[in-house]
Length: 109
Length: 117
Image (tube, rainbow over all chains, first blue to last red):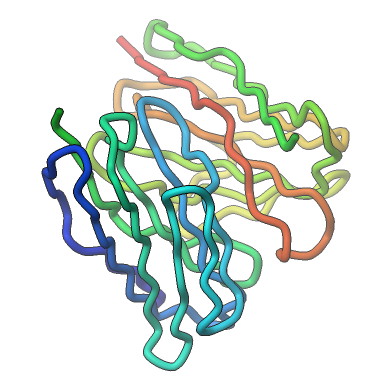
């Protein structure tokens, strides 16, 4: 059975801190690992990772995939209150996404 | 780019009513659209995959007669919750992917909050 596990479930940090979110996956016919940010409404696409060891960056966010260990991390540096959200990772299997439960990040001023 | 619009945002209706939710890709052609359901504090659960011009593929446990999906064009898919009951109350989200291959990410609509009284 496919599964995607995210940790931690929730964390609270101060503005300016760095956070690291973890995602482990067991997905049949794995194609890619995706990260999304969900605030009040629907998820916003962040990254899609297909190759091991290649870091993707977008501003203060970065992510990397380890296909040997079936693992991905999402880093957020110099956090801001606007980074507060639930961060979802999903494994793409046969073109369908299997989502993890998400990590709730709260950034306090 | 890659904007997906979902309508309506919120629906409140009486038990027994059928509710239609629309999902549109505004600036790209979506050969494949997906419908998800999300309960409070839980992650997204895939309900069905719809490909333009063909029947939707439903996930195990999802009643196809209850959740009717139509994907009549490359920019529009609809989900109709037939004879809705309180247990159908949930957050429904669609996503769309351009192109036939999954090397394109899914982009999500803003979701529809359905409340059945």
